[in-house]
Image 1: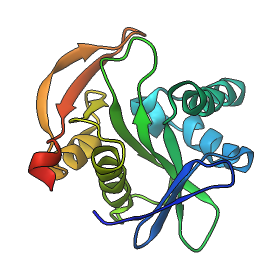
Image 2 (image 1 turned 90 degrees about the vertical axis):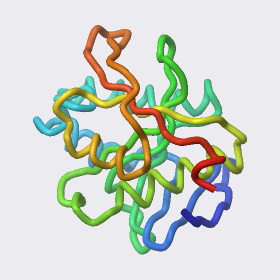
Image 3 (image 1 turned 90 degrees about the horizontal axis):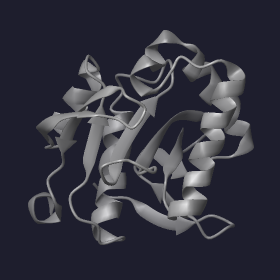
Length: 180
């Protein structure tokens, strides 16, 4: 997946694909984030959450960038600053290893945005960061995320229980040697 790499005002990485921009989260992204997490469809990604709990989760995503130097980008269309999801890397305390993950907000599914963004993020991890193969941690029953992981070339590796006690499926992505 081709992308253009630039830096934001704070020196953080920004990826631009043909249609999308993956950029650092901003305070103005919170309303879209909270709206997503208020809905039942967020059950596969830790929700539903009330607004104060969503705020804490959003702050944790911001803190992940500070503590790890990488994290989940806010996903936007190139022609608008409005958040349509988040895509990127997750590896909090107790996680197995670095994960590439994605969530699209209501009204933006079915356009190939998650695939385009996740492939750009994965390529960035392999080529710019020099990382090895990534995983995706997917909640059982999240068939759309399983289908996306498989479309990206990932294969089911095993079941896992997250540090919060939730069952998960681990999908292993092919490494750079396969995707190059």
